[in-house]
Length: 421
Image (cartoon, rainbow, N blue to C red; front, side, top):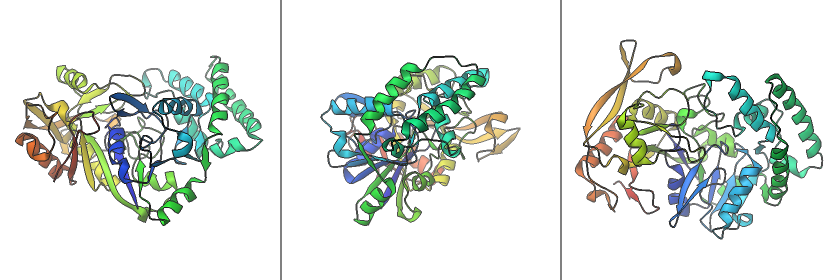
């Protein structure tokens, strides 16, 4: 069977810690989409580690980790990550596997990303400039190079052919930056990548399923950044929802059992795009400070706001969420009053659904005011020890979105997760 953990907001929900928490229960942890723009923050002991491409189960010795075909892989980032993991005594040559169908991010993809974003002026989408969008464009345009191509003697010829195509596009942008150093670093990383376990990912994972092994599929970004169902065009370039597990790993839909959706107790977003509950005054600043809301990959300050139940209901619906994990609940500890967006006001009309094109509308959130618990839950160990007002807030979320909160996180530590009965 396959269980799925994915984000239900605009990313940064704390999925890395949650995957790390669940990982010992599974035999295989598999990333099914996204690229190095995803930053999953873990704490190993008292040390903070940010993983961008390696699945978050890598620190569990008996767990196998697979980078699936739905991912776009930057060999340079992967090499650096492997060095970070190795410093903790983990041998990635034993527990990390990479699907041969996984597409590669080339240096020219990074250049194209940068050139394209620069050309947009004030209409920038907030790309992390990691080359992810152009890599996915080459994938759907049937031009991309894949990990399995590295093992073919014609790889350099294929690379040069694609580079020449990219150069014509870069010339049209008047992009003149020298990327020689990027290419040198890329080919050094490629040699390292060839030493790792490159496998036929779909057979790899299905063989384990046939043997009765348990698989946890790990998503990146968040559901509201899905290329189809997110706040287009301010989205990522892959399918971030549960449907992406099937195409991103090569498994059948009936293999999926639980869909575990991760949401913060409030909302954040990095980069441009619609964010109806964004708080632009001191409350937003306070959430940012209390939650240390700065991008794990980019370091950019995150936009902060109250929880958006319209968007959360939508994400639960399209993912088929069977249980919720609510993270950063402790960030709301100091507040005597919190708010939750139950509906939107659009052109004088109340709506309770996500409209087609949010960027064209003036969306005003309609809030419900809720009494805060105004006390620390950092040292709470079980549900009964939580403040009554927090328990009421959890029940309210259950009813509002139609999925039950089964776990809450009350701090960054591995052990700071509370089961909700």
